[in-house]
Amino acid sequence: MNINFKHIAIIGVGLMGGSFALALKAKGFKGKITGVGRSRKNLIKAKKLGMIDDYTTEYADGVKDADLVLLAVPVGRVEIIVKSISRVLKKGAIVTDVGSVKARIVKDVVPLMPEGVHFVGAHPIAGKECSGITCAAADLYLNARCIVTPVSDTDKKALGKIMRLWKAVGATTTLMGPEEHDLVFGAVSHLPHVAAYALVNGIMKVENSILRHGGRGLRDMTRIALSPPELWRDICSFNRKNILKSLKKFSSSLTHLTRLIEKSDWSGLEKEFRKAKEARQDLE
Image (cartoon, rainbow, N blue to C red):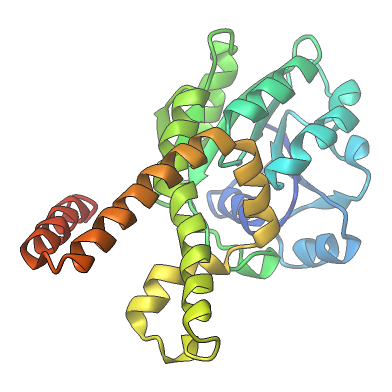
């Protein structure tokens, strides 16, 4: 197992952080894992489940001897947490994250790193619609993609260690600049989540009680609307420009379909459906 860390601190032992800890344990990691968070009850449960070896609700205490600090918290909390721990991070430590927005995180966090401490952004494309420690699984990252987002002055050794770390827990890694990442995932991830919330609300506007009649198709389309609203509120705030760009494209597509139906242009409508079906097949 190619993990060059002896002490890993995970801030936020929920779905993502807990799964990361379980994956490390499953792969035979022999070092120490410290869980850090606001809920002592949650941390006690994580230790009982064998996810972590130690825990604390004091952020600075949890990270002061860590070689690696993983930030597995909503993107809206990252900066304030890093401000609270930056003064105690030991020289040579690496800080990374699992956030689905990267440019704002890099902009906020990199200047807070003390001399000799390096930040390497990461975004594992994995998750579930439930949240919290009870949803964590050792295989969450198995065969998942992890986008690692260095900038021009990212330390090359630290970057290599983070790439190897994600590979060790089963993910395949891809390098992408933070701005490119946010443009891409504003369209392929953030837009679908916003659309899923909008679809559910739109159906309820037709008739509040009819949602329960939906079958598997509706459940598949709206599954991600089960995601934590506060998490996606922050993501929309942090990637506002790219999400708005994607929403405007989506809105124009909906308008086009609406006009085809208004005109009873069924051949034109079929052409649009066929184009979408062929593009969708590429995902399989």
